[in-house]
Length: 358
Image 1 (cartoon, one colour):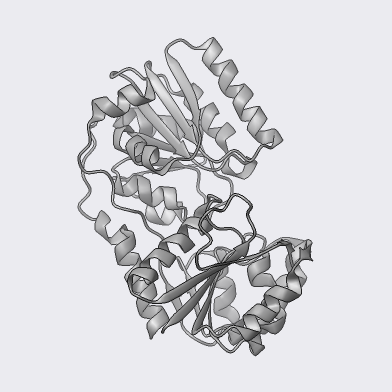
Image 2: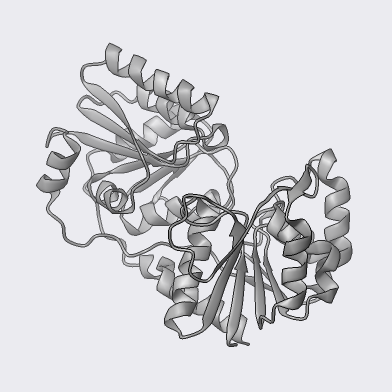
């Protein structure tokens, strides 16, 4: 294994689960002295383009494609990679490979990332194509057996399906909490709640705000951190926050842009993570909350019910049940969980290395 290509629709500086996942794998294989490359969409804001192949392509199998589609397919056919890793289906970097998958000489590995559109009528022809092409992949990796992707693939794939969950970086062990609080301009007596997601409807910031409104704890602060997609939903969230802060003196909401350093500091001082997402697979923020000893309170989405236990959080579609759990655990101090090391990315990446290298 000398040369690897990681394919995803978007990549740094875009922010999201798939982008973070590929970046972590990229850095890990690079440290292993393996030549590793990224194939992704062109981004004019991208500064570091080292080992990145950019393509001006938009769309997917169902919506249709536009841009340098032939260039990308020729790239997959002509470039000599030992392994090509497709991170997520239902997007162009995977969908354009489907028609030519049997002609790609590299070993091909798929991480389907949930098949969220599996039940959509519009996607029936798409999944019929995947059904017919699935055995041209040398290996397939899913995060958990109860996922829609695993159940679908299990019906048609003749080889082993590998199971590897997502993970998290190590949390801050020691930091000046007073310094963080001063930097964020909040009171030392504030009770901090956290949500980290790109600001989009399916990420459910509106649900999180509604839940926070119902929490009867004074001096509470909710931090929403996420990339601004400049859409109608972002404007709605911004207005909701302005209205909430105007009507409330003892509870406040702040919307922050994505920032890795501040994110780790927020985990350090937060007690609860409120998750409102409508569609998820195996959310990275869930693992980040677990390893940071922040109680993860979420709707039943993706792998959350499988991963979250009583000591790490609570899963329910009922807001009253969430608030009841939150109030019972509010006065309890954060306790370090000794079993979180299995979720560290260095452990997870070793599993990927062994799968890729076998």
